[in-house]
Amino acid sequence: MSAPLISFRNVARSYGAGEAEVRALDGVSFDIRPGEFVSIMGPSGSGKSTAMNIIGCLDRPTSGEYLFKGIPAQGLDQDRRALLRRHALGFVFQGFNLLARQSALENVELPLIYKGLPAAERRALAREALRKVGLEGRESHDPSQLSGGQQQRVAIARALAGGPEVILADEPTGNLDSARGHEIMRLLQALNREEGITIVMVTHEDDIAHYAGRLMVFTDGHLTRDEPVKERA
Amino acid sequence: MLWEAVRLAFTAIIRNKLRSFLTVLGVVIGVAAVIAMLTVGEGSSAQVKASVERLGTNVLVLRPGRVRMGPPSGEPAPRFTLKDAAALSELSIVAHVAPQAAATYPLVAGNANTSAQVSGTTADYLMVQNWPLALGRAFEPGEEASGAAVCLLGQTVRDKLFGSADPLGETLRVRGLACEVIGVLSARGAGSFGQDQDEVVLIPVKTMHRRLQGDTDVGSITVALLKSVASADGIRTVQVLMRERREIDIGEADDFSVTDMKDFNTLLTGVNSVMTGLLSAVAAVSLLVGGIGIMNIMLVSVTERTREIGIRLAVGASGGQVLMQFLIEAVVLSVLGGVLGIAVGLALAWGGSVYLAIPFTPSALVIALAFGFSAVVGVVFGFFPARRAARMDPIEALRHQ
Image (cartoon, rainbow over all chains, first blue to last red; front, side, top):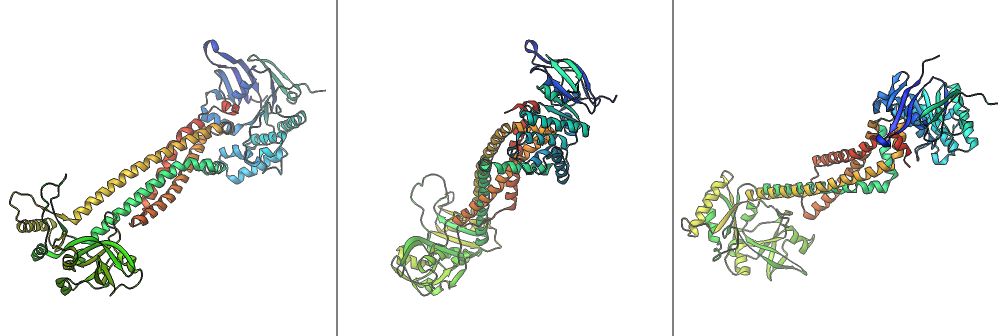
């Protein structure tokens, strides 16, 4: 077994204080190894989004340890967490979160700008990422000129362009119809299998969750189920 | 990275052309006002300096009456006479003496007419004032002695009455007295107070006395001392002579004044620079107001672009990089305003200097300062909004609608 990429050690995250304290995560431990494709499910308020935010270094646990490649990430300051996001993580959101009035290519280039890559190299990497998600020829389109499915592909290309180790997808099919949703899932599955990128995905939908190899279910801030996904009949 | 931020700033500014323009309007007005004030101020200082140099050194002006504050009291001081001027010219320290008896009279030539100051004086006046002729000749001693009806024209009078025609030998009627034009003075431009020095006619002082004024009063006497004489010594000698001639007892105050033109012009320069300083300070306040305008709009812009900031933070931008982006946007805005303001300010200063007839003296230092100052305004007033952007929580920012 390879060393874990992501480790939660008794992670808790609470908001507010005293009487009003809400424990969104209440002592959760798990490991995710490189190359895994994990679906996280659970009702709203179960702590699954909080877990995603902590994995994505957008939030920090109030207690417990979060190790990314063995590094205790909960102790990193804002700038170091930004560095981690820049070099190792890619985000895909339910609402796409593309910059309006910027072309698909410019959107995909965005993380590469913060990596400090020269313009020519950025452009080449961004084109390559758009090709991988099947949007060759749409480089100069604005998000407003693309369908929802295509916009989500641009977002995936943006997450992919920087060569991340993990892609974090927060309900990536939530704003898409079922056919587009399954297309996006097949794309993520292919990236996981062919590029070896670890994928952690939050979803509501059972059939979407089953594209993953492992399923985690959160309930009331606890990890209540963690099992391999059975191949569907 | 820096270049990216500048490019991004231009994209954001061009996307909202009208808003960007209105945002920087305050800086434009502030910079334009400072540039115009300082440039015009410098021009008028140069003007005063030029008139000091033109006068030459050691020129004294004598006027009857005491120099003092408050309302006049008692009987008016006696006027000077031509005998006073003659006595002054006897002094060994004096180079030239020019008496003046002046009044404003109507002037007619052909069917053109105007009015101007007519000054009765002598040919020495041109020496004292260091004022060469453009055309013709000065009064001859015979004409001065006999009170001949001859005159010299200032450029403005010549332009008004004769246009581009040759005025020499033509007749100018000064309050009905027909005078032959024998010369034209060279152009002098505006004086220390902005008055037109070329709106003048010179005639022999005896002509003025006998044929126009009807008395023998001399309003003022201009004395040019020899170059080797210190002006303080010259003033003392002139005062002693005039006290004697005017029979002023020891212990009594002078009933005339002696002004060193150089001191007078130094005073004017001082007043000038104080005025320029005050007006520039007022203009600088509008630059401050302009900066607040930029801060205001940048705060609005940061709020509007919360989601964009969230996206940038999520893909790996550090707080510092977001701060730089918004700071550079503020500086680019403010510097654009500065450049626009410099252009407008120079245009205003040019118009002002033409109107006031003073030299147009744009200063590279003033322009560089205005440019630098507008950049500083951008940094100072852009910092607070930029810091607000940099400190956003990415989760909150991404949730923002």
